[in-house]
Image (cartoon, rainbow, N blue to C red; front, top):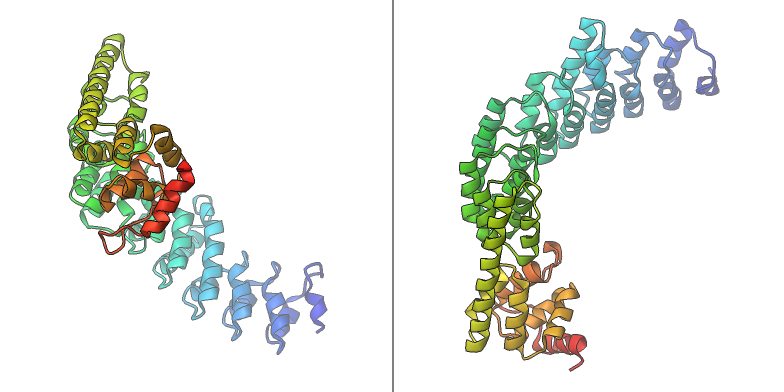
Length: 407
């Protein structure tokens, strides 16, 4: 048989011819045959056992392959075959809700079960992505994927699957799952109060889990009871990443807004006063709290500059108070405030690091200055050498100061 007879636009082949071609010694002939949509199921099943992985991959991609052959391919020794099958099943997964024959649905679920337990994470991830939004997905498979040790597998179903109950989520939270799993839960379209309680309790006991609370606060559909919000506010002054999502959080109690006004950066104070959920009386109370905060900041800054003290400058940087930090840096570095503003506005990690050095700040404060006042992204921040040393030579830092100031 001429292989050209197996082009996509060639007419159909009869049953006897297809059986003959399925045993053809040319792999390319068998591969082209395996991609056809007009073959009898038994021929496709036969090709699923072909010695050549190229042929088995074609069968794995073929939508007309019977599920019994797919189940065989789900355990194929070649990862590429299993991955192609997973991608096909992912494409067909929505049909689980419309398949008319229960036998076909059950066979499809069996294939999904095998692939969801595959040793290769990207195959499990493909299945997780395909099932994450399906209300008719096999619940036991979704449960297994949600507890997977690889975040790329568990995160899609943890964040999106409607099949995970609050009880499931609480059990997963308590099981100390892979890092990042709790953040995925915090991003769900609806987070019940008891789930929020558990997320916050876990995060507050683990310094590395701060992104969990950030995600929860950023999620307007997450329900957070007032007592839990108070626990967040207790820790918030030392966790700047929570300040902006707290200030933007809808339906904050007036007491929480007042507490926020006592420690957030001044750039967020206007947002607190302009919140649309404040009634006139509450708005007045918040405005008074902000006024007291600003007056206290001014008094502390002026006193610190007059006394030449360094500690308030450290505090201003830690609090993200740019105005106080600019004044303190100008005094400590012997530069004009205009030069300080120019360096900070440059978003240059080297420039800001040199400014901290010029001001005589410890290197740990120099790192805070980059992030909290200089607005430098975490991945671009310059970190200390050996934990306590500036990462640049004195000559280079002097050059940076001269570059920005012209002095």
